[in-house]
Image (cartoon, rainbow, N blue to C red; front, side, top):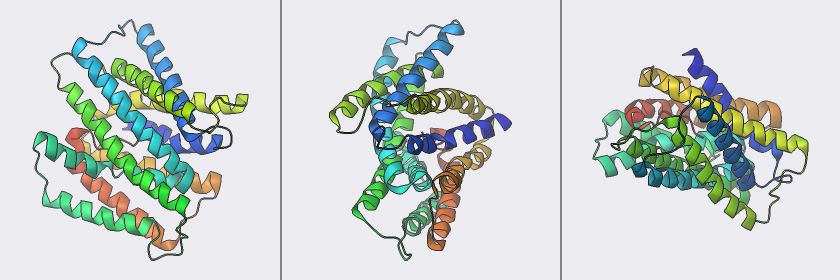
Length: 296
């Protein structure tokens, strides 16, 4: 449990790293590229030091490529949502992957939805409406609305990523999570690199400080935090992990307020509380598909 809490705290800083760099120094897609590149290198070194092989079974290569592409889509929209709406809101919106994962599970694996889950899903939808500022004093600028849209797309993209991982784990060949995550990171970095170079935003870290931030993002979030979380998830009940991992969006919101003076009105705070509670209840239903996992 202490290890899982540590992992949740570590990963809660992911959107903070993104905002610390800032769009003036690096574009959001470029930040995601460096995150995956440095994370992949870290995972590769850890694999080699442990004496394991980096070679994946033939049946898993296509899943690693697919996972890398889907994770590229996930970070592509999530980082833009962080820039446009703030660290806390983007992370809460992305956590709606709990519901997208379950819907995909119904379509792909013929799972059944419980009444509790359906109630949680509708509650979350109501919470999101309040969270984005409907009925409050939020100014609905074009940039803000784009950020909200990107945040909701994050939930769909990340759910697709989790379903890809679940499908890969069901293959006959043994899946080494760290090795698989290594190649997923490299493939994702490839797609992000191509996209980032085509965008007008800066791509190379301009200062040593910016380089250090994206290096820390890759090492702590992409590599170490995920290793810590993956090992903890296998040892704890889904209900407990779902609750503990709500620390991620909650702390991301707190960090956003402390470090960047991000503000939420009373209506938005109520919406955030309703959404987080619904996500927790929904994660109990969807835990078997990995939906209790933190966002990015």
